[in-house]
Image (tube, rainbow, N blue to C red):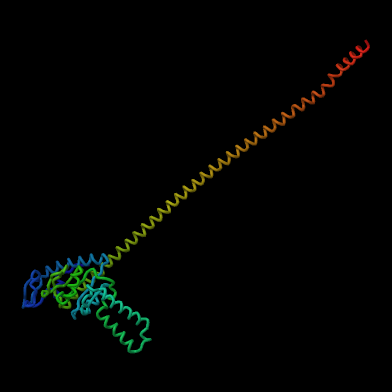
Length: 336
């Protein structure tokens, strides 16, 4: 966004202050001089302070923070509502309700009541009521919207408050200071600058001057939100990238683990195969030994039988002559 220029400030009449009789001495450092009984604001200082305030608001919105616009004077009401709505920020353009910040819990109850009534109206529940009851509820909605329209979506306290005319918005300023909420304000020569974090000396009465500042703040908010969204998208993309990398890494680890598991299974299968082969070999060897032993036993049994048969056959032949001789001897003995 281009920086604000001296020409823009002059064309908008930012340098015109209040009458010299209606000034706050604390604003003296920001007054250049006087002309025709009107104080002239030092635009060099306005330019410097404006850049400081814009830098703060830009950083704030880039961080996703919210700003409350406050301007209840008649010439600023419509403008503040339009610009705050355009940039998606909160606003108060009617009478400031005491405790809007310091007693937000109570204000929030009124907001909840407003939202409930609007929901009932959208659901055509009012049509089921008596005419007078429905009319009363619509009046309640109108009254609540008058003061709460700009903050009915505000869930909590704002991170900063932007004020047009701190002299008129004294209560809003005091509440913000009490709660430590940063204050950015357009401060005229009749205002007290105390308690304002980012003071921008300038005309807070002329519509062109108000329009210049409010429009720039809205533009800064829009730009800051775009940057914030871009950063968020980048972070989300980075997270997605990290998730994808982690998933790929996990898949790789799983793949390696699966391969290791398969290798281990193959190794076990190979070992089991070897064990089976070893068992089979041992079994075959044992069976071979048994067979050999059985054969040797059969052979051993067969050999004695063969020998016995052979002896049996040879014994009668050898005993024949001996028997005859014995018989002859016995006969001779008997004869004698």
